[in-house]
Image (cartoon, rainbow, N blue to C red; front, side, top):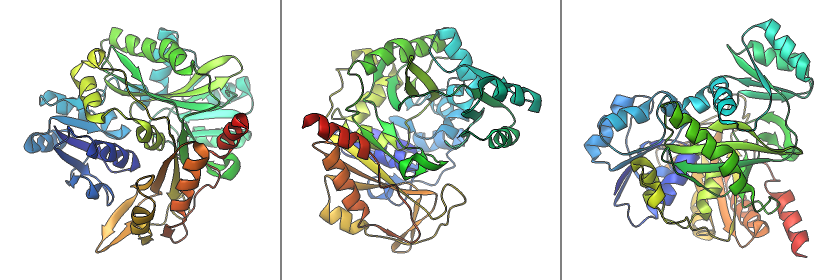
Length: 422
């Protein structure tokens, strides 16, 4: 199978890494890709938001499967253009991708499908914002209605900060604060059958102890030793399947990756948000544990044959990923700094630990930073403690001037799991 992956981040590197290990993949291409993806796939310069250009590239390569990674091309309708060219594509249509592209649309779908979520108001004026903030009280949760690369949400005790964020957006969703730990659960679907993956937890705040501003994600781990063993089954029945059924009922079937961001509250599971694609950095740890070859699963979703697929096989190992970010991230990041230590990780830590590139590019013989989140250092181990140890040992080999990373990814869960075993 010839596969073309669209995107240039660590999520796409994780997808390409898994696809490169799949014996059924005979040729792997990525557009536009990054310096790390270039080691496992042939790169092609293309505007990922230009559906016509992506479809023409796929046709020219003889691609038998196109995997659209990021949310912006999905919301722009790139998957539709590839489908119209008669090429199987993993990723929802523009209409179905509104589930991520519009928080208000997602709330409407959830209401119709009876999916449990936070109470909310959609606001377009300062008066509506003030009323909604007053109705819910602190902590205030204010979400930009549109795409914001994971940084459109403000959770704060400060009403002025909440008001300012709302004022900077055209339309916002203001909702009640949900207590309890957060879980990310991905599901692959062909529009009818829904196949859930293993749950993961990511770390949104920039600094240790969940301090600092929200980011696109600073690390993740899987499995979740503290989670109810029946969690996946419950979310499939109460959230994922009803949402897929509702979208199909509306005539906009959702085929691709449905990502549910969940809060495990004192009143039960509640949906925080939906995404229409693999999450970053959770993909890095979920795919690290998937033993079933990836290409056939994605192709079954694209072709509408998921019901015929054998159950997915998973490693018992744990996986941890730690994001190494640029100086000043999540503000305006500094770029162009040389990255060292990549060869050392490959030589000393493989195959248990490896580096997935996010914001990188080649500059002559050097690899330099080219974005806010630069690398996802990913490791597997017999338990979370071993996976953490391996990930942070590899992080220690990386040199990037002014870089930052959290030192507490999966630390609490690893401690609790070790205590439970003792």
